[in-house]
Amino acid sequence: MEYRQLGRTGLQVSPLVLGTMNFGPRTSEADSHAIMDAAHEAGLNFFDTANRYGSPHGQTEEILGRWFAQGGGRRERTVLATKLYGQMGDWPNEGKLSALNIRRAADASLQRLQTDYIDLYQMHHVDRDTPWDEIWEAMSVLRQQGKILYVGSSNFAGWHMATAQGAAEAAGVVGLVSEQSLYNLMSRWVELEVLPAAEHHGLGVIPWSPLSGGLLGGVLAKQRDGVEGRGTANTDGIEKNREVLTAYEALCDDLGEKPADVALAWLLTRPAVTAPIIGPRTPQQLQDSLRVPEIELDDATLERLDELFPAPFPRGSKPAPEAYAW
Image (tube, rainbow, N blue to C red; front, side, top):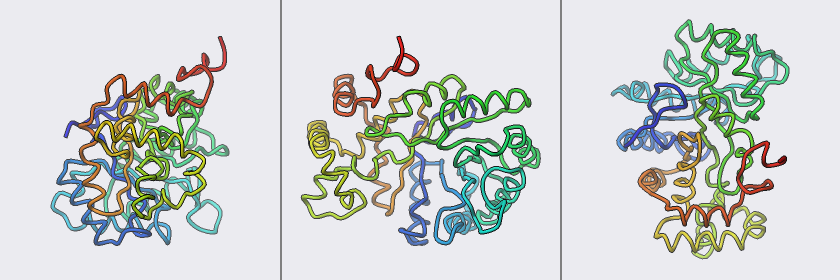
């Protein structure tokens, strides 16, 4: 396993992130623990979760916590990322990014995760109501207490990231080290301003939904074979994109690779991307993804993928401002 630096930090992480959103709602606790054990055996050290994952909220963090509690170096070998922002209860101040909620949410996640620190604490969404000096002071207190090591963002616009970094510099703190964004072959909007902002400020990009809800996972072949899944249930998405998905799956067949693996391998070629999130529901699905970092896509393949899935703004894949100006 060749590890990558997370943005401008010295932190080394695996080129795939184990996403845990399925743990609890769609994957049993026993299978979730088996998947995490298999991930460690394969060298994956980067796990991502959130305080709202699971039903009830917090269930997924609790599953991870009971796995860590088994010992055997599980926590020590894991770069643990979790998130806060979403409402966790009915009362005020149980969501978003006030100093009060940052403190309470961090303590609650630590208790559920059965650990005394979080490696990467991510803001799940931008909070338009809380000033950055309040946010950075609260995060700095958590760092001084040893409860978090790094801070990341998720679902931020490029200018949100730039504003956050400017405020962090003024406060004399490290600021953001990563941004978790929706990014895949079928959704390339982040190339306009998010990726350039991440490159400029030294943030590692962590793509979520890398298979576009299963549409890039060989959905047409699964349909033909009668395999049911998240992607095959998206009949509107399939019909809307049938022509390009047909060409995509044919290209993957020519390469001798699975469509899901090609979609993930493509993300690893993109500027600023550190590692995409995979969300296996079973140990076998995890095994199927492990060879992705070994796949090399040649220039002709990358050009063909650009033809099939062009950036959704003028002038090809050029970032702003050339995308909309001279």
